[in-house]
Image 1 (cartoon, rainbow, N blue to C red):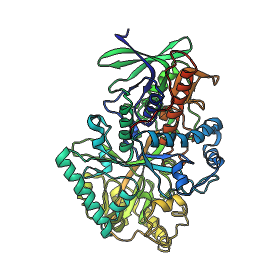
Image 2 (cartoon, rainbow, N blue to C red):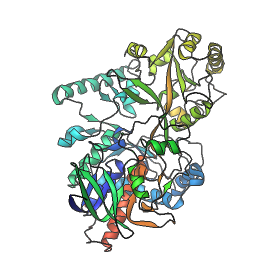
Image 3 (cartoon, rainbow, N blue to C red):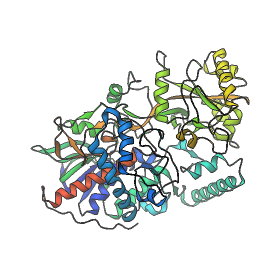
Image 4 (tube, rainbow, N blue to C red):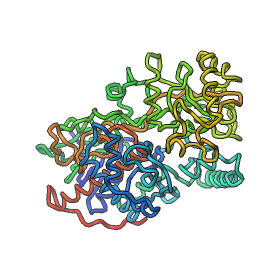
Length: 583
């Protein structure tokens, strides 16, 4: 039995991008909202993400001159999603996405910036674009959060430099070029100096970037609307009145609370990246559930899907891939624990290649992280582990860094001593260090170098795609992704399969309503973010294809709930028109 009953209009389970988007939108329509978060901090996976959103046809794109017909993006998603393509949900995303972005940017503290060009990951596919779809969260001053800063979800420490979170875009470029450009050196010096002064004064840096900035901006916006966010408060059971979901049981302060939600429950609990049983059932490279690594919060254990299934919801396991695959390296920490470093851009830099456990190249390393993990798994068939080695020569690692190893002038001795980074004076010596046949490694590098000195890679086509070139080095020619590995010593880091969050999830309709086995909506129950099956069909189409739909369908769910409330179904119609929120 529950010890207490609480009333609200909308209960949101989860405080990541999808959940907070739903909460803010519903509250702006005059609905009383409660957000229940399982973790002791808010932000979910969003707070650890890159903070990018993929939404076509926004006002930001149009301001840069990117004009496209809605059907162009529809064609791209149709091509990428394959058999899992859902036209009604996709059209809902493409129609509501621009409205959601405009609402959040005009009415809340949430702000985005769009680079002039950031190509889709498969920019050569039908309907793809060279830019105008991916936007990044604008950095945020942590002081604007006030007391909320204490419970903001932490960033991955492996993605910081001296505690500084490096922002996407300009930040990364300047930090990588700091030893080669006076402008970049001055930029980095000012950035680090400001950070250290803030640490002295405030105990931490005050500039939030990437997904941490997005989580903070969403929290500020929710607080401005007086939306309570209950931390350490997992939802454990959905409540029903007949076939309608009417709320949930939430564990809070050691008590079971009955939260009666008059108009709807939105599930946005972050998917199932740490649900070992579901992972074992859906990840093809996993046999016991543990041969996989995810930087998502450990509290993301599939609660939303299990609760929805208990009331007739359907888990969609038909997608091409179960999750957003990303190659990870495992970083030994000084306290004896192990960190995770996601390899987003280093694979595309000139002077870097990947070899399988036999010492042979097996893919275009500069392709998207999602594609590279699939190639790693395929190349590891029959082996004792699913892994590969990322290999660089001395010039490349000092210029660009490699994984958690930072470029010159930062030292790398600590990484060599910990075993994270392997080094050999020659390719043969490196092969012995990583357990690869020396003759195979020697031949692999010799064969690659023969064409790389001319800027070519006929075997796998590094630099032949727009996304490859974007992540390479624009100042390096003739191919921004290709250079011979010839300056010893040589280095290697082991990569293993990981993910940024799950793709498979609950079946929903175009209103973000969870549907039952016959496809009918379950009254009062919605899902967004990683709790809902991805509209991309298990493919990774571009930067932000998780957070873009998450924000959009959180917005869509709340708008539908508000419309139902205004129509008088069921409970008092408390909804009102959209109201402005202080920025």
